[in-house]
Image 1 (tube, rainbow, N blue to C red):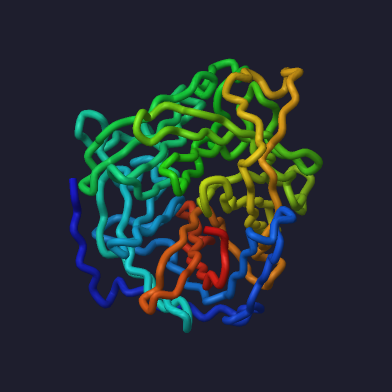
Image 2: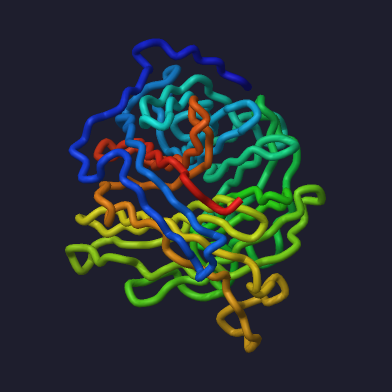
Length: 377
C-alpha cells in the first residue's frame, strides 16, 4: 500500500531557533582514531531542525523515527517509524531534507509507505517493531526488533518501494526470545541497528547483550552486544562479533529513577570500519548521545560460541574509540537513534542524525547535521 502525500505549506518544517551553545561551523577533528591516522575523521556542525510531537501527516501522527538512510543515486531520504502499528500500520517515510554547506534549513515529509507482511497485508497491532532501515541492491532493508515478552523473534527483511515483502534473512540460533529469559533477545534491546558495508555485506547490531551473553549495561559495567554479518545474496549469517556497549554514563537524580544505555545505530565507513551511536538516558537529567568508530579487523568471530558469559575461549571484541559526545560539545540531544551519510543540495558531504520522540509531548523529532570534512572511505 503506497500513500502519496504532497506536502503543503502547512507541512513545511523550518529550522527552529533554540539557544544553542554550539555555533554553526564549529569543527571537530579526530586525527588518528584507534591509533590509525588513515581513519581520520573531521566534522563541522551545520545546524538543527525540530519537528513538534503531534504533527499530523495525512491524518497520522508523525514520530518514532528510529532509522534514517539516503540513496546517493536518487538523492532520496527515507526514515522508519517504530510505531508498532498502534497509531497507524507500520510504515516508512520519504523525507525532503534541505541541507548544504551553509546549514540545515528544513525537513519535509513527502510520502508515507505502509510496510506489508508476508501475506501482503499491513501489520496488525503489536505484531512488529520497526527499528532500522537501509537502501540495498535489491530493495529496502529493514529490521523488526521483535517482542521478547510476546515471544516474537526479531527479523531482517527486504521490501520493495511499495512496501511489499520481498524476502527475509535467516535468524541465527540463539537470538529467538525464550520465556524463561535464559537465552535470546532482551525486550527492546534487539535488532536496533543496520549497516550495509562497501562490499555489500550487511551488519545487524543488538542494542545490548543476549541473555546467555551477560547483563545489560549498568552504571559500573557495560554489555556485550553481538553484531551479525550477513551475506546479502544468501541471507545467511557469515560471522558474528562482540561490540562492547559502554556503561550507563549518568545516574538518575532519584535512586529509583530509570536509566540505561544501548547501541541503537551503526553506519558503514568502509569494509571493516563503522560509526556506532550509543544512547544513554537518566531520568530527570536527559540523554547522553555519543558517536564511536569501531574496527572489525582482528575481532573474534563468535558465531559458534553459544554463550559469551560461560565460554573459556579467548574473545577479542571490535576495537572502539569515541568520536563525539553531543552534550559535551554544547548540544541538547533528544532520543537520537538514527544516522546516515548524505549529499547536500550543493554536493556537500553530510552526516545527519535523527531522534525518536516516542510520541511523547515532552520530546521532539530532532534532526542534527554535520558537514563531513574528512572520513575513511
